[in-house]
Image (cartoon, rainbow, N blue to C red; front, top):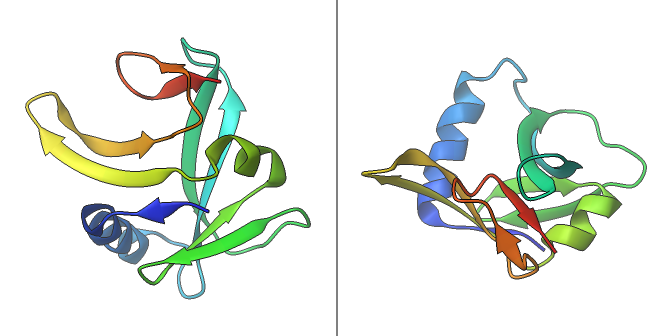
Length: 108
């Protein structure tokens, strides 16, 4: 399961309203190979479920993960921060053994 903070929820709702996906869209979170630590996080809005999708809901936000990504992201908290180093989504992933300095990639 992925959980989201209140700040992340606020930003996701705003981005969903601005997206062209419209009613019935959900947040798709995935992991792909790449980045300086080996694995990278991806987020997008989608309207079509895939056969191996796992769905979760937190704070009214519906979240989809494919099975491979679920194995890497189980227990992750999605946050949104604004600070001196910039703003953006942060993945607090208990499965990551290390991550790069920018926080956009990780390894297990």
